[in-house]
Amino acid sequence: MKIGLFIPCHVNALTPHIAIATLELLEAYGLDVDYPMAQTCCGQPLFNNGDLKGAAAAAHRFSQLFAGYDYVVAPSSSCVSHTACHYPPHTPGYAALQPRIYEIVEFLQDVLNVSALPKPVYFPHKVSIHQSCHGLRQRNHATASELMLPYQSRLERILALVDGITLTQPQRRDECCGFGGTFCVDEADVSVAMGQDRIAGHAATGAEFIVGAEASCLMHMGGILRHQHGTLRTLHIVEILNGKAAA
Image 1 (spheres, rainbow, N blue to C red):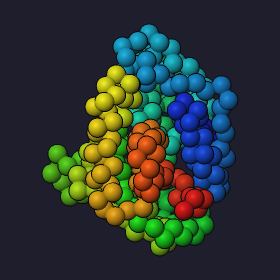
Image 2 (spheres, rainbow, N blue to C red):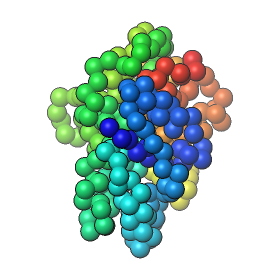
Image 3 (cartoon, one colour):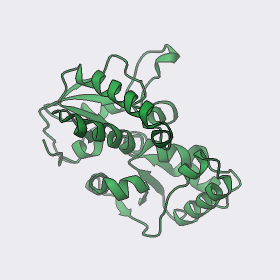
C-alpha cells in the first residue's frame, strides 16, 4: 500500500511536528509513505475567497501530483474535505483520485480497521476532545447535535486505545472554535471571541489538553491560550497516538 502524505500549507509552515507525527504513525503500521515535495496549497483559500480559476488550477495540480498513490492521507479534516468534496468533478484524474483521499483518523478506522495502536501508548492525562466543523459534518468524525441521533465519536473511539487517558468533552461539544480559515482574518474580533468561548468550554471540563484532529483549529486556540498564559494546551491526536506527545 503506497500512501501519499498530503500536508496542508499551514501545517508545513507552522506546525511541522504534526506532519512528522503523522508520517511516523503511518510508518509504524508498516505502510510505505511518500511525501511529494512538489505539493502546494490544495486551493481551499482561493475557493473560499471566490478565485474559482485559481482554485481549479490547484485542483488540477493536486490531482496530477497524487495520482500514483493507493491513498492520500492528511492530518486535516478541513483540507481533506475541500479536496474530496469541492474540487471540480471534471478535473483530469480527479474521479479516480477522489475516493482515495482520507483524513488520518478515518483512514486508520475505515481502511486499516485498527483495533490497537502500533505500540502501547501511555498518556495519563485528562483531555477534552475538540470536534472541528469540517471533521464533524464532512468527515463523519462525530454526530452533529442538530441530527438528534445517538452520539458517536471517531476521536473518542481511537483515543480509547491509549492507556491511562481520561476522555471528556465540553458541554457544547460541536461548537465552532472561530478559526474558519480566512474568517479569522476578515472578522478577527469575532473569531477571537468565539475561540475564547470554546476554550472556556474545554477548560470547564478540568482537562489538561484540548485534543483534536484539525491542525488549524488547534493553531487558533493554541494562539489564544498562549496570550492567556494558562496551563491548558492543545495537541493534535496523532501526537498522542504515535506515543511522542510532550506531557
